Every structure is written in structure tokens, then in C-alpha cells.
Length: 160
Image (cartoon, rainbow, N blue to C red; front, side, top):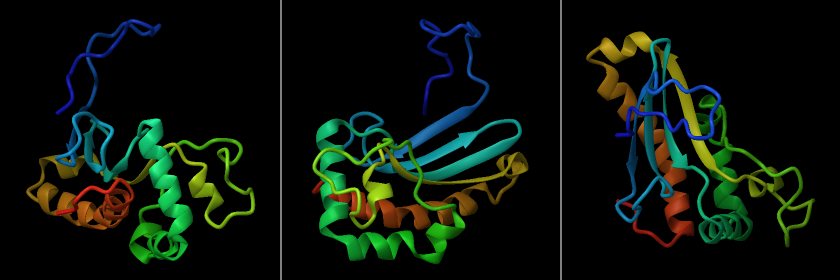
């Protein structure tokens, strides 16, 4: 679970508390947020949940990119699957140009330019008060598990 206090050191907004609750269920090998996992974010107006990896360190990012380049069929099967498309596709901040060493015409170049790899879906906040929250989260996490499986393979981590 993430802390409720905001880091206001470099922010113009000095509001001390966050207006949402969030938790990250990360891979057992991860000591911080930089490991594949699942994420749940609850605000007063919506809930976001999904999975993947957010801004991995340079070494791990390189391994993920290498995996995508070396396994274009597996990556393409994931990105073209109906469950991934229904979630809006793989998301994450991207570089403007291809990373060093990658051809701009490479297959999956838009994904190779990413700095994060995640799937996220958003639903109405009323779900938080419903008994269906756990089952709906589990459905989304199962869909995101396909991405986490490939990321775990890229990072040579066991996937359970």
C-alpha cells in the first residue's frame, strides 16, 4: 500500500495528503515499485486497475526491449489479443525516437520506444463499495498477467 502523504518538496501544491488510495502487488523479486506486478488505484470518481511494470531501471528496460525485439511473434500475439485491446492496449510513456541500437522500421517499434509497459482499465468508483470489487479486480489482473508473464520472462524471473 502506498503512503497517504504527498511528496511536496518540489511541488507548488503543498497539500499534504493524497486524495486517493493505491496499492501495488509486485513480483516477489521486486523490492520497490520497479518490478512487474498489479496495481489498484481508488479515487472518489473512479477506480483504475491493471498490471505491468512502471519505469524500470535502465538494465531491466533494456532486457524488456531485447525480449520484444527477439520475440516479435509472442509480443505481437499479446498486443493483438482481444483482452489487451479491450483494455486499451499496452500503455506507458515513450521516447520520441527509437532507442539507441533499434531500427526505426523495426517491428513493434512503438513498444520498443516505451519507458513503461502496463495495461490499465478504469471503472466507476461505486465498485469500491461493492462486493464485486475483488472479483472484478481478479478478472483485470488475470488479463494483465499475460503482460507480466512476458515481462517476467524478459527479466528471467519466475512467474507463478
